[in-house]
Amino acid sequence: MSLFEHKISEIHELLHKRDLSVSDLVDESFKRIGEVEGKVQAFLTLDEENARAAAKALDEKAVQSAPTNKLYGLPIGIKDNIVTKGLRTTAASKILENFDPIYDATVIQKLQQAETVTIGKLNMDEFAMGSSNENSGFKKTLNPWNLDRVPGGSSGGSAASVAAGEVLFSLGSDTGGSIRQPASFCGVVGMKPTYGLVSRFGLIAFASSLDQIGPITRNVEDNAFLLKAIAGHDEMDSTSANVDIPDYIGSLTGDIKGLRIAVPKEYLGEGVNEEVRKSVMDALVILERLGATWEEVSLPHSKYALATYYLLSSSEASANLARFDGVRYGYRTPNAENLIEMYKKTRAEGFGEEVKRRIMLGTFALSSGYYDAYYKKAQKVRTLIKQDFENVFEKYDVIVGPTAPTPAFKIGENTTDPMTMYANDILTIPVNLAGVPAISIPCGFDKGLPLGLQIIGSHFNESTVYKVAHAFEQATDFHKKQPEL
Ligand SMILES: NC(=O)C[C@H](N)C(=O)O
Image (cartoon, rainbow, N blue to C red; front, side, top):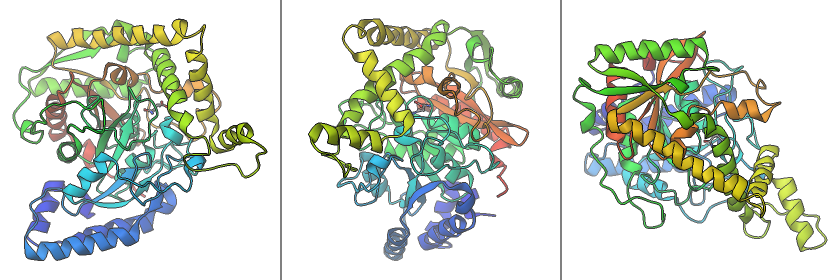
């Protein structure tokens, strides 16, 4: 059995009793990477030398006093759009191929305080634009459950590395489903926190009003530990919320008797695969057995979510990505005659197809004459979508449905028409537009491919989301299955 099949609390216990060292954990990580990385391709950069040095230093420290910090010495992988000082950070884009940040993101500083060990940086869709990792500027990560399938995206490397046992846990980011959909495809637990709960300082911006960093783990308890470590107010992020961070672990105990679940009819309708629908219905039976009740509800504006998201996120991307101009960061074309040509060629050569598509879409939506018809209208619809959620949460504690309409699709299956790729986000996007928290946890399999259950909470109510997720996990075995690699 791999060390990483243990929960954080169990590993901590072993470290505390000195039955295990941090170097053992880091060895385990690199041993596994040596065995499976050739197949899975989850990492863009490995940081072996520093990871081993950090492990040694932590082991020496532990001789003086036994570690009390729960995350002490645990090997973590970081999505490559989160900046790490001196460690190459590319956002999977050629335009940042050789970019070494000069500072650490706030979440990285927090992990340093928690004394985790960074193993490396994980593959993703370029600038987080995509649902399959096929838009990475460097390579395709494959699904550990079936190497012909995508791992999901954009945090595909983050989900695949955890599922493959290369790291104990990872950080991803979620703008329209980028943590939850890959978690669903790879059979792991992924949490998109409430907008504002986790600092975005040092997250390479895609769509600033939607982006959130969150944890990907093998089980719900570990996820709660990691979120607790990275959440909290940060004056470096003006949208960071000043709220108390509850004891998520404490909230896992206790039952879900009397809990009221809403199941949106829009989330089980046309386009949702039969096995996916069945796994959600079976999950509801289990939740009922645990004492919860459920009713069908409507989120009537869901049908506008996809269009709203792709308008707003592309508009924000068109503004955010203006900074990649060959002057300030990264790549600069070697063959330009003048400044304007330098800008044009740098961006034409540095960005991939999907990124260019979104910049053009967003620039169009923001341009004078179209702004009111597209951008402004989308902002209004976003408010209606948010209100849909608020209405449901007046009467219900959580909303439950599938994470994605299908299990992991085949590599190349959705690449010819961007719309089919965008449609994969249909069940995750409304959550980002509303700013509420949601988790994906394993809830079944379809022909050997994992399926995810999405549990959505009201603003800053991660505790209730975790409690329901944990109760379901304790009553099922889906999270215990491992991919054979
Ligand atoms: N970034 C995300 O959350 C993923 C989404 N599929 C997108 O391409 O925008």
